[in-house]
Length: 179
Image (cartoon, rainbow, N blue to C red; front, side):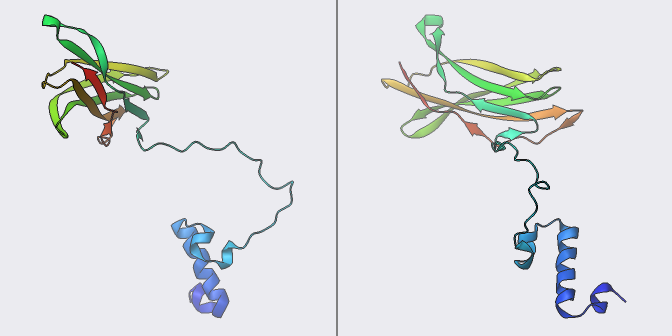
């Protein structure tokens, strides 16, 4: 004979709810309103107040964070053409290897114009840390006064010989560079 057949009525429903809470890992408020009643505990038994926890951003993935920064003018190249720096800030926990995939875009007549891509690999040692990866590209002239350029980046992390999936694309802000 099972426990639910032995106990009558309300006790049977409470037992089912407690079993759901224990088996499925539900919180008491999600299982039933009856269990959600506040219970007062003495001040000596209550846990100490902990510091507020920082929400984990959506782009923190597999122990690393990648932030594509706003592109900026770097220097004048061959035949006085402007060279643009597309920086990406990478922060990782220790012993991670990260692959960063960048795509470079230019805005023309409210449409994105694909300029190319580049992939970087970086290994973080014992202490992890933050680095800034730079990619340099010539600015394409589309015969307008200002060129609007931006980038997007995604990444994949290796830790202990296991690779994560590719993260979602993160977009930088658009930079308007005078040509």
